[in-house]
Structures are given as C-alpha cells and as structure tokens.
Image 1 (tube, rainbow, N blue to C red):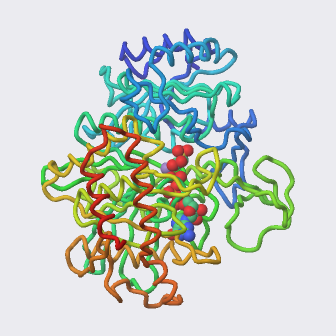
Image 2: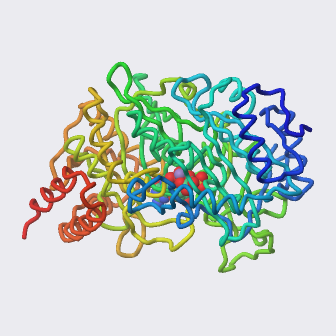
Image 3: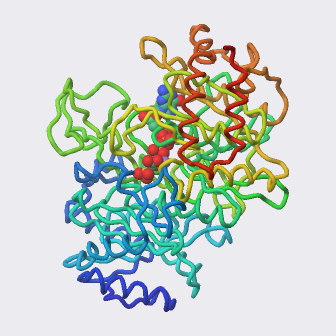
Length: 590
Ligand code: GTP
Ligand code: SPV
Ligand code: MN
C-alpha cells in the first residue's frame, strides 16, 4: 500500500492538493486508486471483512454484494446541500447558499482530523467518454471504500483518468468524508468558481458519489452556462424503427419518476421490429454540434437505479443488468440470500431480512426494502446498451421530453408550440416528491426541468440560458411534455406506463420527423383522435380519454400558481416566460 507517494501520476498540482487534504484530514494511509480489476477484488474483500459489504447468493447474483447504509442516511439531503457562490444572488432563491469563506471555515473544522484511523482513497475519474474534449475529470478524495467501489462502476475510474489529466490543473477537486453520519454535521457544499465539492457526513448516493449530481449536474450546469452547453437531469435513448432508422430522445423526469424505466423500455408486441437502446438513464450533457443539431452525451458509466418497482414485467432489461457485478444498497434479503424489494416478481416471501437487517414477516406494515433502495450496475451489463455510449460527440437529439409525477391536471402528452413555449413547459414542471430525497413525500412542488435540486446557479439565469440556446441551435429538437402518473378518482394510474409508454414515444418521434399531424389544444399540440396507437392494449378507452383530458378549472389553478413560482426570481426572471403564462391564461374562458 502506498503512503501517499504514487507512481500513477507526476501531476505536481494534484499531488500537492492530495497532500494538503491529507494533512488536514490526517488519515492513517493514503491509497491512490488505479481502477484495476485486482484493486476492485482487493477492496471488495476488505469491505466484506469489515461488514461494509455482504456477499449475496453467488449462484443467483455472481459478483453482487449488499450494503446497508445508516438508517438516517438513505437519500439525498436537499436542505443540507449548498451552492457556495460569492453572492447569494448567484445561487438564487431555490438553492441553499453559504458564502465560500464561511463554508470552507465550517467544513475545515469538520474535516480536520476526520480520517484519523482511516484510509484516504484518491479516486481519479472521468465523466464522459475517455479522451473526449468535452469530458470532465474529477478527483474524489474519500474515506469510504463503498464510495470507491461505486465510483468504479459509475465512472471511468482510475489510471485512464490520470493519463487523460496528464499535468493539467483542470480537474474537479472533490473531498468526501463519511464522518459520524450525524445529520447535524452533514454538509454537501459546492464551490462552482473553484471547481470544488466538499461533502461531509453522508455515505449515500448523490451525497457521496461526487461525480454524479455534484459534478455532472451542479458544477456541470454552472460550466454549461459559462461555456454554452446544457447539463441536464435527463435520460438518453435511441429508438430504432423497422426500417433501421434510429431517433434519439432525451427526457427529464424528476428523481424516481421513471427515467431508468423509460431508457430501458421494451416496446410492446404491437411494435414488432422496434427497438429501444439506452444511452443514459440519469444525466445528459447537451452541446450544439457542427451540423447545427443538439448532441447528447451520457457522462456516466453505470446506473444507480431505484430498486422498488423493478421486475421482469416492468423492466426486464434492468433485471438483466443487475444480475451480476452489482452493489445493492438498502434492499431486503431472502432466505437464500437473494435480493428482494416491494414490487419484485412473484409471491411476497413469508420471511425476509429487511433493509435494516431485522427479521421481516409477510403482512408487516413496514417496508422490507427502503423505498429509495438502489442497485449500482455497470452500463456494460445492459443488453440494450447503445453502441454510441462512448462516442465523443454523443448522439443527435430529435426530441426533448419533460415529465413529472402528477396525479391531476397534466395530460398524457403535449407538444410545445415552439422552443420558448417548450422552455416554459420545462420551467413550470411540477412533480410529487419521492423517496429519492429526505423529507415529505407526495407533495407537489415546482421542479423545473427536473433540475430544482441540481442547478448550480440561479434558476432564473438557467431559464435565460435555455431560452438563449435557441439562437445557438439551427436545427433544434422538438419539445414535449408527458405525464405517466395521472390517476383516476379511485387513486389508480390511468395509463399503464412502462413498455406501453412506447405508444406515446412513437407519436413524439413521428412529430419530431413531421410525419404525423396534431391538434391544437389551449396549451399545446396534442395527438388527434386515434393517433396514439392503442392496438393490443387491454384498456378502457375512457381511461385514455381521462388521461389525455384538459380540465380548464385545474389549468387555471395551475397557471395562477406558476406566477408565484416565477415571482420569487424578481427582475432576474426572463420576461418571455411570464408573457407565455399570461398568453395561456388569456386563452381560458372566464
Ligand atoms: P432517479 O434515479 O431517482 O433519478 O429516478 P428515475 O427517474 O430513473 O426513476 P425510475 O425509472 O427508477 O422509476 C422510479 C419509480 O417509478 C419506480 O418505482 C418505477 O417502478 C416507477 N415508474 C417508472 N416508470 C413508470 C411508469 O411509466 N408508470 C408508473 N406508474 N410508474 C413508473
Ligand atoms: C436522484 O435522486 O435523482 C438519483 C439518485 O438519481 S442520487 O444519486 O442519490 O442523486
Ligand atoms: Mn437522478
């Protein structure tokens, strides 16, 4: 083991920074990660010996392990996540803000001596394809072997990142310490101007895997605004039609609102000859290509997917993806050491071990798996992985979809009249909160472009940036809005969702290519009667009518409440969006 010296890099600024962080955190040893298979095996064995990972049934799940996080550390913590820009206005009213000096001082106090008795791992990683000029390099310093193993799946990690960095000083400086997991001493701080992230006191997902939400979205969106591109909370998929043409689509749905499922969708029987390929399931970096189209790259290399609800019916590709070399966090375990979660296939087992490690019996009112339990799985396991995931320029996007989880109001699908109206649809998105973040669930809140928790700068400026992108994109994608989650009066989903979302996607693709008509509604273009192909679907047509219905009274409330959301941004709010809101309001009868 290394004591801080490394043969992996000669980058003096990197070495100096690592030494500086080690001096502050005083670990017993410093280990530079090379990303090799040998290293993965060694760290996995170590994690097993310390009880950080538990091997699962190796016949059923080769190379798979279980991790149980602290029961108070199971999701992102939005109230403890800070954007530390020089002024509060730069962070904007929807972000928590702390002055950089104050944040560094406070966190230095926490980090000082925090790795005593522990190992400091240096994790070099690349977000985006190796050797793409658009990819970003990060170094995450962490004392968590679980973080190292997850980063090994989620990113291009180790020596290739250091080789790509060479002697450049342009890398994200990420510092993470598990601490004592006391939520009172938990801070996820971003310093966009310094390209730095300091995260203390959580070992979970988006709080601790710094390449994901912290770098690829919060710092990424800040860089995107400066450099003229977009970092978005979007899946990317390619749809191949029977003629062999592939159309790429990017879609922003809030956390736990269906991105992974949509990105891995298997079209229903009726769509014989159609195939959906996954490019990414969570994050898209969008840039204007030389050809004037918008191109999308998935900066990640794996999936950190929601376990509950995943089964052979709803998402067979995900089930295949997580069969091997995956880490499961906070799922339940069966008698034969397999995994289980609410919404798993088959009968509910009589007895399980729940996500906290306690015995669980069928019929218990407690959930066996945590609602935000997750699998970390390599993208290369996905049988429908797009062959373009490593393309430096990404894939060309024909349609952008915004969608929230709304039991009322929002119809199944709608197309924007134009780019600005599409930005308005994204900016006014709302969704019921989920278990992906701590706090109340099922509460409708505005979550513009599914980026409320992830914008690294003032959301009003982010809207302006989206509006300004129009001038930069000669051949822009068409913009749509969907809602898979509308419910009937009995509280049942009106639309079957999952694979059947292909029926809606087909209309979107046809619209993007201009090969099908639409009809104007008060608030956007909607499918004409019969244009959503329902053949082979056993559904009461009245349900589809209800799912697509526009209720004027509900929309009036919706439009009025959007105003309050806009107003908090004051003068920074682009006038265009408020004018569109007023125009739509004026279309409503008295
Ligand atoms: P993050 O990883 O948190 O960003 O989430 P995500 O957007 O990738 O969400 P995911 O696809 O994992 O879905 C979250 C939950 O929504 C799961 O429990 C799914 O079973 C459920 N879900 C996904 N798609 C649909 C759908 O079309 N209809 C319904 N009713 N539920 C869905
Ligand atoms: C989300 O919450 O949107 C996720 C999971 O994708 S996490 O990595 O924890 O952010
Ligand atoms: Mn996400």
